[in-house]
Length: 264
Ligand code: DGL
Image 1: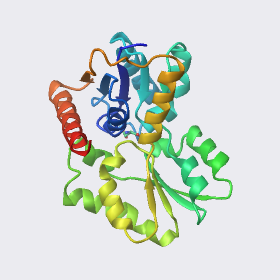
Image 2 (image 1 turned 45 degrees about the horizontal axis):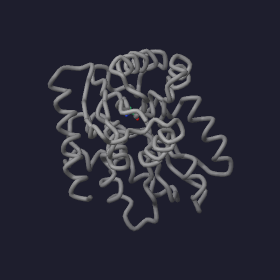
Image 3 (image 1 turned 45 degrees about the vertical axis):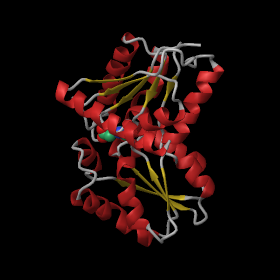
């Protein structure tokens, strides 16, 4: 038993799509969210640079006493997860990978699309996963141009967002795919737009959020680290950017909580 918080880290707001799944599936766990903000977006940066941001973030979360870290960012995972695990061998560190495996295992058409950042799509990790699971599956790789910026500005519910998604997703309809993998944690905030473009075309939209929550639940059990719930779950938010950014993160998360409570 361990009542310390789980640290969740992303370049900015995107990891809140993972945070939402942890909040939903692990109601007794305290969560400490760190949205870098200062260095976002990561997607077009060099691997070494992203790795150094990830190290600084995990150092900060460890200093705050977390019991586990979820790297709620595909880009930081591809750039840094091996290094983070070497550096903190005692602590479970969960990474995010585009859901290429489940998409490959369920595609009927043997053609899928993966939407992710430039860095993730050209990373070793992505290429080896695609090679392993997509031997006879064609994987179409597409950067969600403008998506991260829209989510960072909180503009998901706008025509600008709808148009940006249409521009990226509509050309995929001609490619005879039946799965679209959202391989960046910012993108699930745009899922309603993606779904409205593909409606009626027999295409599933998949992200990794729920699978990560299941993995975290398994690790908590396996290492006897789950919270006993006696102190009530606490939710805290930090950023390397300014206080205004941190407050926007917190209020976005509070809105997610309110929406989730409506569902519960
Ligand atoms: N949310 C991130 C990901 O999952 C990165 C977005 C960015 O900073 O470019 O890839």
